[in-house]
Length: 202
Figure 1 (cartoon, rainbow, N blue to C red):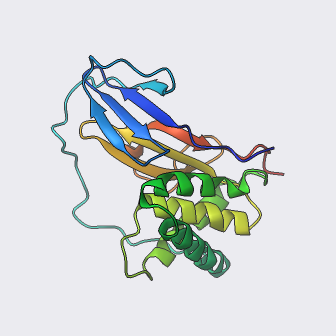
Figure 2: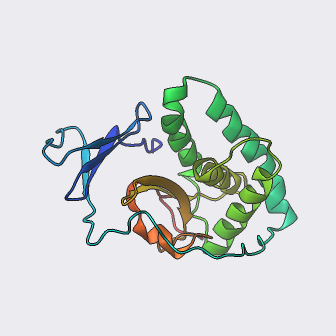
């Protein structure tokens, strides 16, 4: 079985605009609703029922980050190095495509369960704090997917787009599709690319 490739580009229609995410060249474009969806694009629909004016409620105090077991932290260290190498080596506009393909490295492995995915995400976030650079959700989720591969498990990886305002996000999910170590607001994202291990957890 070949590794799943990210779609060339996807269009998310909101009723007021089209959001194009181009996985080939890393561009994210906003088109007016009058523009027709290209035949080679993967279409999605995410209707905006009521405007939020770009605001949301956040906790005034950040919760303490839960820790992962040390063997998961050990797996996250080489995974972080590999993610950084793939991120920095190659053309800048191809970064999204490279990282999206990297998440599929464990696609032939048995699927991680929720506990394993949780440990991997926590370990990836712990390792990210050691870096003197920006390390956002995309890099963290790729690192977590690689840490699972080091442990012999495949990750359920998701990438999506939300509207009002337009923003991108990447995360890991449990086998039933529930976002792992993510806030409820993750449900606002339309999934535009996903990697699923083909086998169930033994």
